[in-house]
Amino acid sequence: MKKYFKLAMAVVVALIFIGTFVFLWQKSQPKEIVYSEFTPEVKDIQKTTIITGTIEPRNEVSVKPQISGIIAELMKEPGQTVQAGEVIARVKVIPDMGQLSNAESRVRLSEINLKQVETDFKRTETLHEQRVVSDEEYEKARQQLRQAREEKAAADDALQVVRDGVSKSNASASSTLIRSTISGVILDIPVKVGNSVINSNTFNDGTTIATVANMQDLIFRGNIDETEVGQLVIGIPMTITIGALQNETFDARLEYISPKAIQSNGANQFEIKAAVTLTSGKGGQGGMLRSGYSANAEIILAEAKQVVTVPESTIEFSGDSTFVYVLTDSTGKDKTYTRRPVVTGLSDGVSIEIKKGAATNEKLRGPQIITDDNNNE
Image (cartoon, helix red, strand yellow):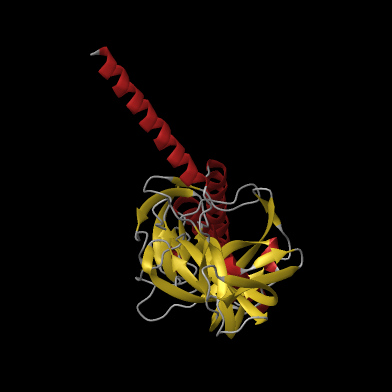
């Protein structure tokens, strides 16, 4: 029994040894090297760049009050269209006690003065009827009466303005009514009824009641790297893609390149602006475009039409020279490729222009095709 067991073990060991030897021998055998092949083709080639930015209105206006007070009423909401001069809100005035006291004092003094002038005028008028005073003195007395009455009316108006923010004589131009200064869309109303607001002065910019912009006049604003800014010219066309509107694109035209660079993540970048063209049914008031949308702008930096191109992976770069491997013999078991210098042109990162050195009736060697032990790619 032991004899058979030893014999079986010897057979197993021998099989393992032989299998290992065969495996290592197969591994040591040279594998066939197979390359992909490409034929040059004639097509258009473009070098483009993508710039990230935002959609903004060209002119965005902050509407501020002319007087300080409390928001009593809001007539509009964000998103609504407003015309220049249309009322957005109404402010209730909280009078300054010092100004109010001065205005009330002025009214009292004007009343006292008016009563005195009226008394003097009546006396002068009676004497004029009796031919005691001259016509000149009578006219002077009447002039003083008119001036006193005008001063009284002005004092009353000043008191009403300080106390109520509006007087009877200028109610149509009340500073308590906050009006839009331009026609457009209300982007934001950052205040609520009951909020205190102040007018713009030397020490304060004033409270913004509303932000209004013309959404028919939009621009794209973004930054471009210094390595590409030199290839831009004013007026170059751009294609805008909105992140929130995947199926829509908009045409734009470059109209501004900043003369000064800004630092961004350790790189120099230049701000650009482009006018967005709004077509019927796209964007605008009540349309799809909104202020602050993230957007990408595609710019064609260079273009070559109907040129011979090959995949860039077929090019061998050696210093300042470029080469391709042209198929010269495919009759044998192993194909023969000849190294040939070429003159390259524009590249879009995938395909590259061949100006000289390769024809459309030739086959060029590409990258090596990696195969497994079963000769599968």
